[in-house]
Length: 130
Image: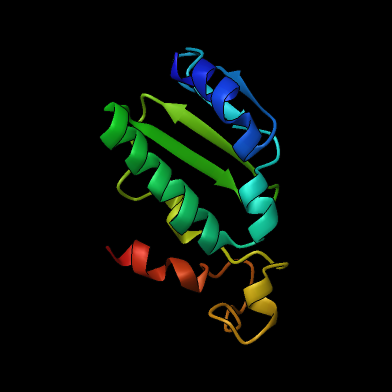
């Protein structure tokens, strides 16, 4: 139900998306964002995680009592929202690398010290340490 509602209510905000089977049990309880507008516009791993993924997971849990895990693929600009699944405590997305095209990486911003695409984004360090 949440996947169906999300596709119809939020496509204007997040971009083209569709309900897909959830990994593990095949229930139609996941939403695949084909091209996330937020990630596409920000071009920043830290912004994706800190201003979209984590707040969205918290919102669904607090407002609706529903666990949801957002799994962004920052290189591809896609994301999967999986309902009924709590984000793992050791969430690998909190160690995502800085994207090569990140505007903060090119200048003197927070990510200018990112040494490679395998080094976690400096903007995620605080989240990973929690």
